[in-house]
Length: 237
Image 1: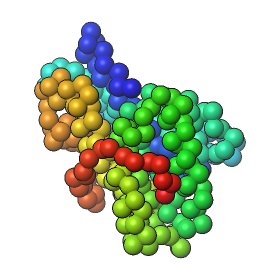
Image 2: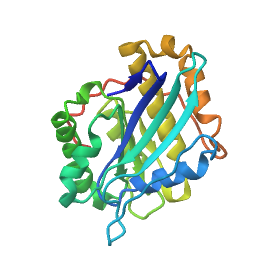
Image 3: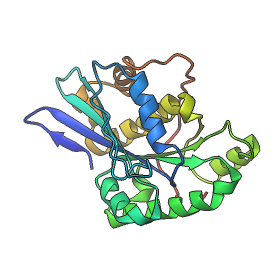
């Protein structure tokens, strides 16, 4: 849940990158870290196991100060994809304000994607997070590999739910900014409806996004406006 500290005039927004093992969650954060100016980003913290997979979380705080004097911190986390770390995934997801589901676009990863999606819903509910009311986007990563889903298949997956769908090659930094930008659009709208965020910050959605991304390298990106934030997540992709 969003953290609002009126005394310190700070707002904390937690974004979690969820998905199956090796889908590119950590790669997304590394690519974002490389694109964000050091003036507004914090350290990228990574804890790895001996097999080089993220065990606990990555945290990349991006911050700015609004016209009302509030300092806004956006913290990006990833969860471990391996089955043996289920309890850790649930812990990291606790208090999430928004979720980016990173799917592996290879057809061979379909079952792993579906299982991770179901686990995400279970973990959200276990943490008291309503899947229907949580801003969520889907990213199909690894679009450069052989035997990935076709454009028609991805469009069909997008049509089955209300979550905006993005494509990426995260290892090359492609699609990672667009995914976060789309998710933060939904997050701002949701928080404004809940807490009157625009009034609190004295900033509208366009200004909110401009402040966040003005220190981000947008070269080669294709930013688009996404619709809605409500989601029906009962059907696995």
